Image (cartoon, rainbow, N blue to C red; front, side, top):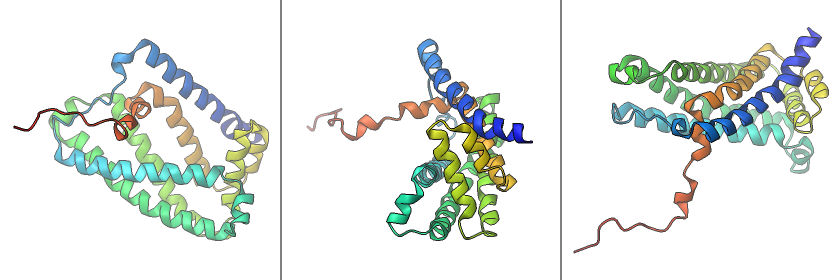
Length: 227
């Protein structure tokens, strides 16, 4: 069990991240024509607009929350006067809210993919794989909120923070040992999250790298002059 724990939480994250980075670089270099969202908006737009907006709002806020919550050293929170218990309650509330928003959007998107004949015909096996992996990951995340209610002192949250921060400084052995005794739900959530990094380069998720942020500062383009 110790060797498996070390592999899953001390080595697998590095393997997953290496596949994530190298896979994306190789795909962009060799298969740029497949670097796209593969949008099916022309086939059906009403459900897509609702589901996509809810999903993206939810998942973006969840990712920001995970990034800030896991990688900010607890000394910073202590300096700001934020206790581990209070931070955990905030994380549970915000995570629950945006998790439900994301869950609603993803449910609409999955239903649309499976029940609309035109969209279903344009859906690949990888599209469905990614949707159901995200769905499972989201469900595990929501379940973890109920698990966290059993220890509102923030103790397990501190262990997860220590795990993430030790990984960043390439101390995989310490990272793995720090969460050896956390609840199985958190462990499943981590492993599935790392697996999403593994499949990322082989799916349409690569379009995240090409988000059009330049449009925010781009000059207006005159399409038709007045008069």
